[in-house]
Image 1 (tube, rainbow, N blue to C red):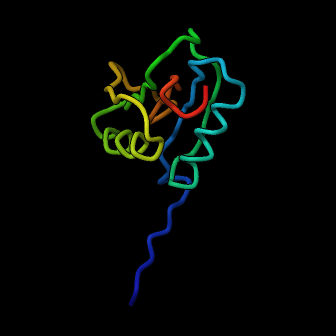
Image 2 (cartoon, rainbow, N blue to C red):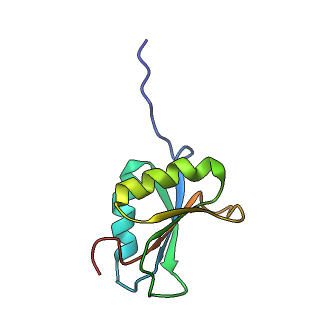
Length: 103
């Protein structure tokens, strides 16, 4: 019997995207790249600042580091860090910086 891997929303990596450069629509661009690859956008908004040079990809826990690595590879930008506390809302948070295509 052949088994097929089916990704359900329960298996999806919960994703928060924050705009760190001020470019309108940049969060949607990130979501367009990541959502088809098994990420589920749970929230998006603006970061505290719009002068972020390097995209920050923050894993909520050690178990989320692999997903953060995958996000970095898919986006072709960013630095990965481990959050200092489990966010609860997201497994991976992407704060978009200038190194992500565009701006």
